[in-house]
Length: 463
Image (tube, rainbow, N blue to C red):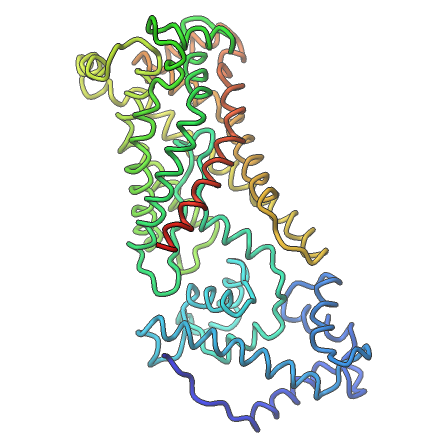
């Protein structure tokens, strides 16, 4: 196990005494609530009254409403031991860091979580900005302790960041969603982490898409019919075209929709991992803007790579073909371009969808985090899912015209200009054909894929 040099207890007590004297603004030999709050303010740490009170109560062991020097030293010693165990554990898991006794931003984040003091991505960037003056991208134990000594135990921002990175769910328009970072757990390689997410996420996607396939078939039919039709007429068409298909028709095209999950996810994950090394100043602690750039490019690469499968799925879902072979034969007559009909609006749609989705999700989670910080409460799964569903639904509505254009192009191979002119004949409604089943899909798709992924991930980790 990676070991840090033993502490000099006398030196520590001298430093803690110096810090205590510096925090004691009125020099009365004790720290008040307001003085503790001033320390947090100066360190740019969360300072809601509830959080400060929780920290103050943890230090004020005799509950007399003030913190004397001995109480402060007991608290500092206890927390330093906790931080030391977490830091040494990370050194042990990363042999290349044992000699230098320093951690990168990614290791720092994990060490904080192990110490029960979760840090958000913003917190980690702030630590690196404030204490890594040399730009070496590494943090010593004393630097880690200096910042983490008074970090609150309840940090909703950190929970939101962890959720965004570690979970997986299928949205209303997965083709428009950008790639997300795949972070490793302690002692885990990127390949192992990617494999876990690919297998569990792929299986969860199959479950989610299969259960919501009827809504997807209705959406495709409402978008691609020669004239606008409602959901009821689309349901009739789905169960009668091809003839005698019955309710099995609600799942037409779902097989190809499930098959393309694995390659699409794989390309997104591995492309993102390569791209973040190019676009991020610190690949271990990528910012939101860097996430957007790397994720957008990786998402576009994945979309182009699996696009022929997307076109085949759409063609089959129209009910115009009796078999996959017949569909492929028809597309082949149009040459390679037929397999990429509508690819331009598909790739273009990634940018506004991602921008809206990430922005709204960020606003919602920040507001929720501040509210929960004020109450000192933890995050709930329904709240996390709600933030994601609201941001995804909003992005879906705004970018829906592009979704309609790409789907009609996939089904007909008509020029984009002609498709737009045809849709204009029905006014604004023409560009929102099929939106109702698409929005109805958001909640079940998100909930089912999340629940399936978490269950599968648990089984994977316990195997």
